[in-house]
Length: 466
Ligand code: PHE
Figure 1 (cartoon, rainbow, N blue to C red):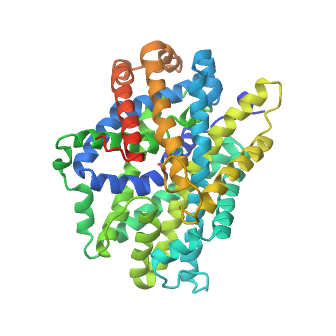
Figure 2 (cartoon, helix red, strand yellow):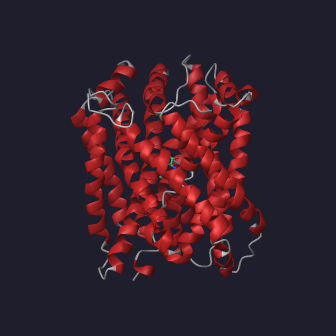
Figure 3 (tube, protein in one colour):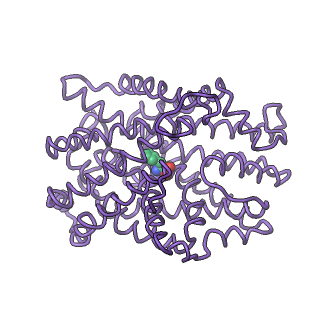
């Protein structure tokens, strides 16, 4: 019988692989390198590192602690903390639920690209076959049947893992695929930085540009870095709380709260080293978002000649792993809270049943995103967005996430401000960063979250505040 009926990590390594797997996702691959290059290069990296130390570690520590102390998923964890905080739990439950609407579709795109590049390796008719990358991508995402099929395959692969449980499913898969991702990333980096003309890509990413800080520019750089950090660390999504709830009581929370953000940042910089040199070597302009991964890089692989499709297959497999382990954590956060709900109402909290229901619900919302075809199929749009992907992204990551994080920082910094301390020391570890943590969670984190929230609102609605 598994502890707390929901499961527990078998080892610290397993916990780390699963948690880093959650953090390392599409955000690292298509968000970080581009934002870093566009928003100040090395100067952006410095700001990101400062935020990572002050906000990233402090928030990760807070969420892991909340999870471990209560042993609950996101909704009941906040409820146990105090009835009046339940709404923060709901925010942290709804936002991963909305993330599923588009993350599963994007995961499906990754599978399509593994298949297509592998098709080229073996010379199959379903390969890319030298088609223009932009046209190939558009041909795929406007094709509703194909988009839907690949979304379903991806969701199935995630559900297959979570249904098997914390240790036998999530931990086991993560300990295999995350080291594999790392090795593949190193292979792609070696190829990328040795391409003729790769230097321009390194320059794009690393050359310090302090001009972006002029005037109100620094506010927007700070908001961009803060938003990226949050999304990338899977914070305010119930995920760190859920994964923390499966930790053993003797684990050192502080150590883990440093390792996870650190590893995530290393992988983000490595992703830049894999991507930007290749883009510049091929004489292309960098972009952000899906276009970078599915159009620009596909062009790069095609330009590489004979080995191109092999590198393409390896690369998209890597992207898939990143998306898969992230999406698994999103499903787990949503499902874990639902299992609590069932148990506290006298039910059995049957994992399989819960995840089948959540799987169906997520596929209903994902259908809207998949069939919308990035806005190309004439669907009516809302909130001034041009695609349904953006709409779900706006609601979840854009608004609920920073708002939830702001509430969390206020709760732990100002109201329940000694709540975290005793859980950390219970494991027999000295809370050596207590003073620092208090300053971060009290002042720096709330300020940053407010800034990120305003930055997102301004960005998404094109208000140009900063
Ligand atoms: N952290 C993941 C990334 O960088 C994405 C993610 C966000 C996963 C929120 C889960 C929850 O892509």
